[in-house]
Figure 1 (cartoon, one colour):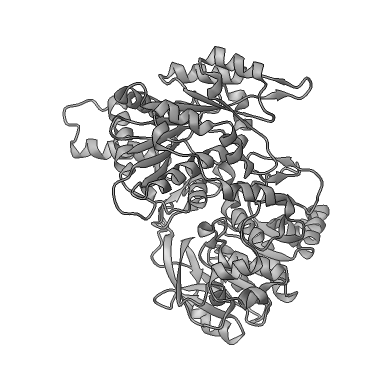
Figure 2 (tube, rainbow, N blue to C red):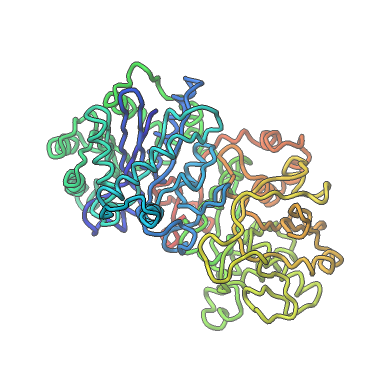
Length: 635
């Protein structure tokens, strides 16, 4: 078995931490025992990680009987990411089995096109909970339970247990495992994990453990000097905890000078050929090529003594993406009306799904971020400029998307966005809460039920269009929602959503919600013209709603963005972009399968590129290859 372990280690002192959190720089640890080979990878959104993962899978393809796994370690005390604020930790990514995990696992699924489980995400909370449960059962009877050895042993046991379960859909034992260790060198919460890995490296011995440490090499803009001190301090902190890097991956705005590499080699005790530069590139698809050209894979193989069993990575598709990336010129503008628009990571999967769809249709995506509360009447009085700007963006959009969310802040603005889309026949996609507000708006405007609302926002409403699910818990928040993959059955064959999904009778999509459309209101809503085209197996839970006579007005209770992939975009996002471009009829008139429909309008190989506010001036390239225009919103 191969275990790859990349432990996230940005820098040892806190002054650089906020900046590094934006860069998402990881550290890599690779371990390969004598007859079993382990690679531990700390994956994060940085493209270099995805390259190593991609390379790993491609090497597996040379050996049909080789299987792999991938999971991440997060040192926070939460049991999972389900109760975290999107502003604090980005979006919560939901897996098929209902696991609420860090958004990084969403990146793994998208890049690797795999399906992970809740066990593929290890947190400090899970580790401590497991150890305390064992102590209560008497597993440590007579022992004083301590961080070392009990917590560190539990970490290693969990890694080895989960690593044996393949996630590539193949049968047989796992040969390759890719693992992330999040956090920052010097953080207290990361220390048990670092200690566990130190023990692990000692167990397997020299030559069977490779540590790739990713750190920042900032460039002083005034003089253009590349500073190595942050990396020197980071490596010193890593050594102080018992781990010594074999390879350095240095994040910087420009390629490292030879003399800088020499200095790093001298002070960090790493050969110059093992120092990799991760500098800014025009788009994310250049990163795999960048690492291949620097022979990063050869450095890893040399440490692990794998030179004779591996081949060059196959990067033809990535090369094509990098070459085509600047060929997209025709824009499509999508208004994102949400609660957390101040941080794009809060809607990362939605953003990626929009990118996948727009690229598939060969359009340049323009995201207009609209805080939902800025559309409300109260904002017109308190901040007229923000109100006018928000409505100007909404009215200038080719399509409108209202994502999910919790709480009543901005709900009225989302209702107004749905109303505008319905009345002005603008393509609309509502996800989770976005579907619910569309139903509420329809009840208010068409059924003339002025107090129609959700019991989430008005528990005493006389016309509850959206209600709390009977099986939900009102006392416990964590893990109590309707989570994971659930089946939706199409009720009408001749509807847009069914056609976009290839005329299937049912689909499986992931859910995350506590409230649902009130089944007692369905008859009145449908009689007024709303069509619930998708329902669950009981036909009591509404999953998809459409306006039949609208160019594209669809709301879904599930989250289709979680299963969107590059080259395989989510059908509903593909429909939204196609409708916004006036190509929906061409898309639907295709051959009935999503893949063929996509191929009809594009081959799916293009750059994921985002522009904000419609501007085409040169943008600041962020670490994930997306673009920002320095207005406080990270795209």
